[in-house]
Image (cartoon, rainbow, N blue to C red; front, side, top):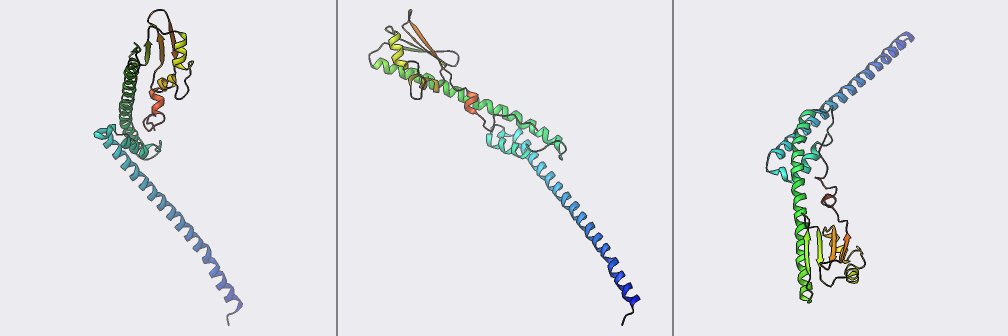
Length: 222
């Protein structure tokens, strides 16, 4: 049997190892956390480097006007902030795709404007032909650089005719003026070609509004 002194010594020796084991566990936990942070930082840096490479490729290549590629490039960079790895390089890449975004947006804007202009010209031609087929000697003329003002001229035009054609000035969906507003007309004038003239101002959707909050509508900035 162990005497009392031996038991106490043994108990003290066992107890003294517990703080050492706890300290080792703490050091291991700290080391693991540091290694994990290092791995995450390395992966984050690698992801940023990949995003920068893709953005530079898009900005300098044939895909500069591609909305899909620009969106993908911006999605890879837009969450980068000062203090992140490679921020300066990322900012340079963003400047490149921003130039592309402006060019691509202008292409869409100009294409939409030209399409709307053609629609107004087509409407004027078809409407004049329709009235001529009905035996009415009506002239339909477009004005303005964008053809967004129309004059409907008929020698017998009077207030009653203008009221009837325009539905009393209504721009409700499906109405005469509502249809013209939808294709971008800003002003409609009914005239007899002499002294009688009745004008209606419209408020069509602009090209900027039509493009709305699309992927190319807002600047790319970190």
